[in-house]
Length: 278
Image: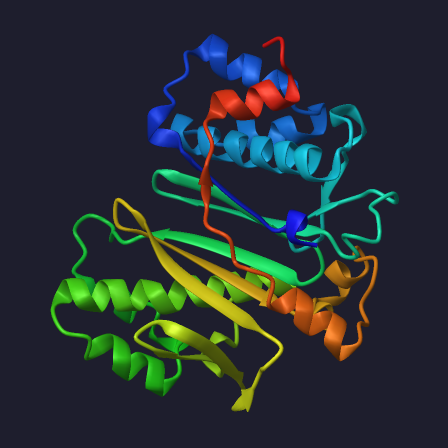
């Protein structure tokens, strides 16, 4: 199953396409994907959305060997992307993936059995805001323990980074289950030892069927991965999965598959995978 574990990242600051280059890259994707990219007003947001789609189709093509023109990626009502394909083999009993983008980075993570959630954050604040004023806007999303750890982290920069660490993990969890909702996140409480051995309690209950990883990605970006049991998925996302029930040994093996390092990909590489002649 290890072949189904992928972590790819693109640094979009290294891609400055002309209008023609952007249109050419966009034309590779299925027509139904175009509106979700062109709806953005700012070019940088269009680039993030385009690269996100290129990552999804390239990863599915490379990992599963599905011809590009047979790949169908849809989204649940909450916006969770999923692959519609009936021929994924036993080696990948629940192949799923998740994407995230913020700042200069767009990334994707995939898992063969566990739910996977991915989140990237750039540790910045909006202009004209103070760190304390900014994080205070989100205080209701944290447990009292988490909030104490944030506001007592040290300098203003320490507070900002600590805030984003917790926020990044919470987002990865929400995205893994396919919720799309931030309500109730104060009941999702993360514990750690200097940000290793990360675990979570939900409504005070230890969730031992989940695994979490948090790391730095350069340029003040943080990235988190959440892996969990398929039965934790929302109902709409659960309907897209091939299997929900696994015996304990089978699930534990999948949960403890190595969380591989992120591999840097370029936009040109993704385009060449999907359309070698472009």
